[in-house]
Image 1 (tube, rainbow, N blue to C red):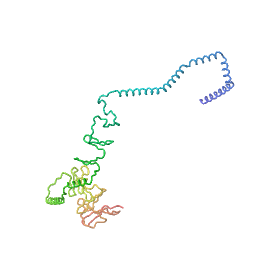
Image 2: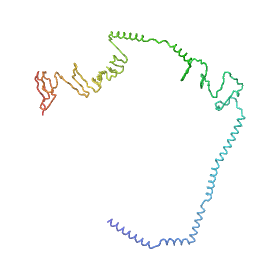
Image 3: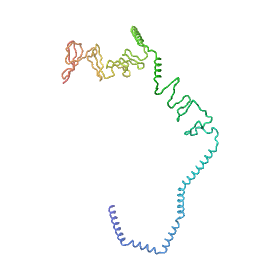
Length: 367
């Protein structure tokens, strides 16, 4: 229903718009506007109104302000142009008058004695000759022919800028910075005096031989004594084998860097005894090496570097446990066990001794 109403309204609107456009096209709007304007311009009242409006607008224009602004601008330009010249003329006149006044005062003023400190005087080009000094007394022992400062007197020192030419030098101490050049006569005399002042060289060989004899005698005497106690408070190295030092509470054998309470080195192998962790001790090695435990030069237990333990022949609670690839053919005690080193399906895990040479298999392996 709503769509039908919208369609009807749109259709009515389109028809009305078309009718209005058709009616408007019948009129010449431009001609009507021109006729209206021409009619208005011929009306005296309209012309009088326009004339009054023009006069009113013209009376509102402030001509005085325009002229005043132009005058101010021109004055500012002139002042800007003339000010530097006037300032320079004033500065020149002031400096000239000031210089003339100072020169006049300097020429006429009398300075009191010691009123000008010497540090305030420029001495750079100052020159003074003996002719300018009243009552100057010539010093017959000194002749000054230099053009520069060659000798400077200081408190406690005399500085000579260049070479010193003299016949004799008398001094208690002579210090030469770089090189000392001496004539042949002076050099020979000085050399002879130095050589004569050196005492004859002592023969220390005899003293060393006597010292060695006394030392060997002392060692031999010490070997005759048995020390019941030996207390050492410092670092100790005995026979270049046993080493210990205060503070670390460690002993090294064949090493001066023990890692545990006791560290023993035998060629490339290390064995230690020390603490493993809290309430646990440790006997073994800290390095990637195997540890063998045995007796009568036979290894009974081997602890590999990876932690595995190898036991060649185990006696557990009086019973011997060993291995073999076949049924044992030797006599043993009842209860001894021999494990099969080559187990296979249908065979036994091992054999147990019943008595003497009598063995019986146990633990048959299922196929």
